[in-house]
Length: 318
Image (cartoon, rainbow, N blue to C red; front, side, top):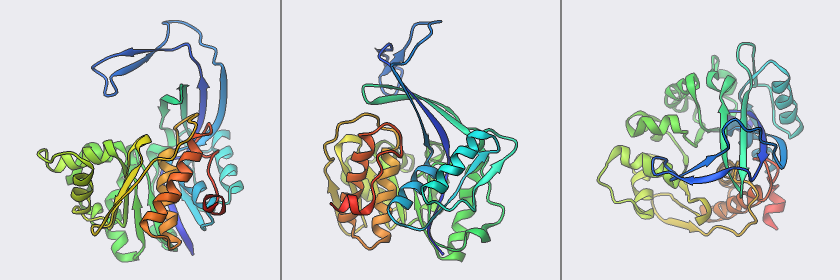
């Protein structure tokens, strides 16, 4: 019996650090800024780093580090890159019996341009877009599922989950991706009612709430109130470097962000979400789980890579 099974993506991450790019103001962008490089130029990075990422893999490695018995349901290519991911999972203590080796699609790849701690990413989804679960009985021996962003055809997994949850009795922790949030509340409604813990950042939470009611005044309290009313037992919302908040519908809780020397922000959300859920599984209350999650997220952003800064439970308790 597993404590938890993660479902999501796995990628080979390549980081390039450079200061040759120029940040330009552009009101057409959501962020209001663009990262530009000289047209036709060959950019030689100051440093490069090879790592691993993807919500399914990041959270699985985190859960294993925190002492949970975990398996990862991911789809990776049959080529060498996929083999590297498979070996890395086993090395980190993650059960690989549910890993699929896809002979048609290449393993997902991320090229990450890092500058001043923030990043711009080029994403090749590859095999991540075609994760399937043909036999759900292989996932029955678990207490929890942690589902992260699902892209492309992989999203079809979500359509079967409400029925699977009602029959199996396991609990669901869900960190929806942009593809689900773009479809909004009507698409997510059924699964939200079957979710034990939902984890979102503030922008995602705002998008979800407005997809149901455009007239809601957006503030922290209303975001928690509106989403808990959609059905989850616990709502967790991270606010980038401004801390986090959570509610069980009875009481709202707030956690300040911990100070950290930020090297790279990739993986911060996965580390927070997985650590919070691990805390709940291990019997910690919401406030205690938020504190553990904040510490792990702060550690992750102090390293380059989504998994390098992950801490064990003993290290977090110190």
